[in-house]
Image (cartoon, rainbow, N blue to C red; front, top):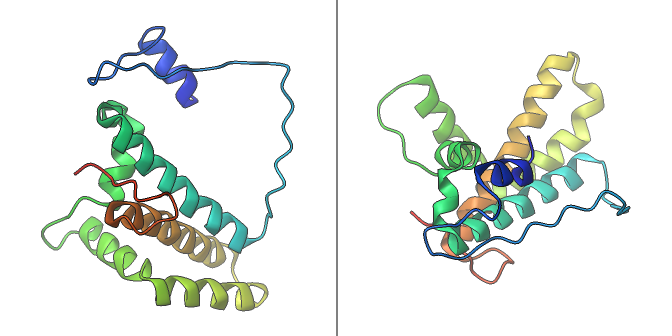
Length: 156
């Protein structure tokens, strides 16, 4: 279900805690051309920018975190985990992989070697990992104010 429909279902003109409204426009006859590259690097850049936009929404409308899907994304990428669970280990690995040198080097390595990966499941796991690392890095950079979004920060 799209965010438009989720917000609309809450009531027409969902009010956030700050009292402002989000204006939603629904137009069936609009045609848009998205000239986005469909290679792995393009998808990774898109996810990084998507994370910056997510952070901007949270900064402007902190109560948007009450949307379960948005809150799950934030928790999965930014909330600290404790203990030695598999989930905690995965988050630590993702945090390391999201560092600039590993993220960029990992992307280059996967792009170079993707045609040599023998099993489809292995390739899919590598793709998920590198795309997730870019999304995580976008949220992290937005929180630190170092993204290209002018310093939008994720509310903690």
